[in-house]
Amino acid sequence: MKALVPLANGCEEMEAVIIIDTLRRADWDVTVAGLSAGTIEAANGVKLVPDTTWEQINPEDFDVLLTPGGFGGTMALCEHEGVQHALRDFNSKGKWIGSICASPLALHAAGILEGKRFTCYPGVEEKLPATVQPVNEIVVVDGRLITSQGPGTAFEFALKVIAECSSPNTAADVRAGLLL
Image 1 (cartoon, one colour):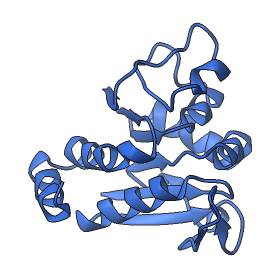
Image 2 (cartoon, one colour):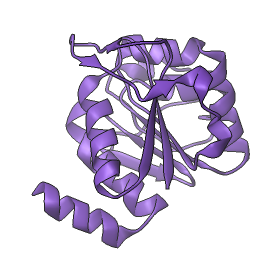
Image 3 (spheres, helix red, strand yellow):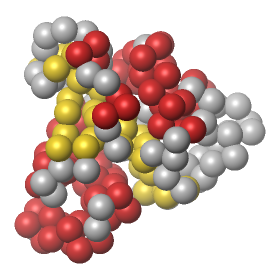
């Protein structure tokens, strides 16, 4: 599987790193695309170095689009035309989309949460209309949409992405290797 993980300043570093690392342990081809050139400064000051920039990739080349949270990073995902277009395109083509923490706000900005079961970081629902509200579950799968709540659920999120998009056996092997 080819996964695309966009990163922006203010992203949640634990979510980003856990998602990227866990998928790579499953032998996925993971591309980390910075929304700006150079080092990304995550929400808690950790510096992350993307593989490339958003401008240098073609989102159509990927099977899965995964958005880490963190409020600053999420706002950048909401405002980035390329990410918003990719989210709508993945949704319309039935490709896998994964979102954790605050980043379901970016999915809402793309117009793809209406009528979906999803979860997010507690409190984020206050920024969503009454017609689009999360459920209080660690990880939720609705069709080809996988969502999760936050940093502490990032391993479960990444493992569910592997199980759903690739293989439950691969997810179990990665889980065992992580001692989870």
